[in-house]
Image (cartoon, rainbow, N blue to C red; front, side, top):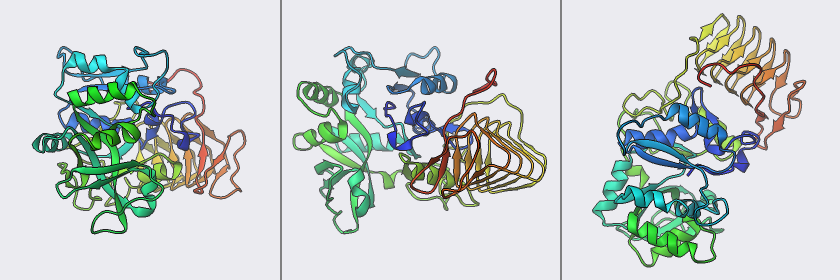
Length: 403
């Protein structure tokens, strides 16, 4: 499910969908969930897109070409087909309902319906095995969240065997977990359905007036009539994860602050989410650009994309530089995210800033917390979290290879 607008990530979603937003020095957000599927040995993937999808479609076509002669190995982009009506997708459930022909043509025993905009590692085979072992009709990936944050999630009540007895999407007041009054059991928005149950539920939902949403309508309607179970994400074991990494790491990067923090989690000598995992890699688009060049200066605790250049006397500390980024002499980049093919001018200073792709930060500019940030010719967005954001710029001349 990759059709979300991502309104809370503005201005990064001004020209692209949330799943297509660059993340780290090499990835897009969607690469994390697709990597989980492929690393789990699941190679038949439909990606349902909708809003501002061109950037995402181009990325998927260039990065996720896993198909070929094998008919059950593919990553296929599916925009709204308007088979059932003359409207765009009216909700997550409607998006799948409008593409029931794809499920029926493929003929699977189970269907995994996952969001495309979260950062985590997960072996889906373990969730599917649990689904089959308990003879579930629906399995919902679940994790505890602090009670004060529960209103942002679908919250579940469960029996001792994990069967869901109640499901409320984004309740104003959440019911605490048994034995832990400080937390509630939250849905991660990832579901495994037995196919015939999914098809029947989507058809029934389409025939009534509802929000046509898995969390708001489909799953709550099935709780009282079917075997709906919570799958404990904390029990999922992924190979190659280091002892120092956060157990069951999962982040919803739907706001500027959460997006920023999740990227900072990949830095340090013992990152909470370590990208150095050959047994469960996060796949990125290959780049034909030149190697990184460090002319001089100070470089510390940072991720650097291919083709980046750090000038003499520059300072880059605890930051993420995308592909082809150029940091001029005397510039300072601290605690910041600078996306692909951006140039940071001589003597410029960036602190807790996010600069989208294809920008030119003028010499001497200040992108710093507070209202004293200044940069001629750059529109600045001051997020409530104190992070300064520069929207996507426009490329000048032909695009470099691999963009």
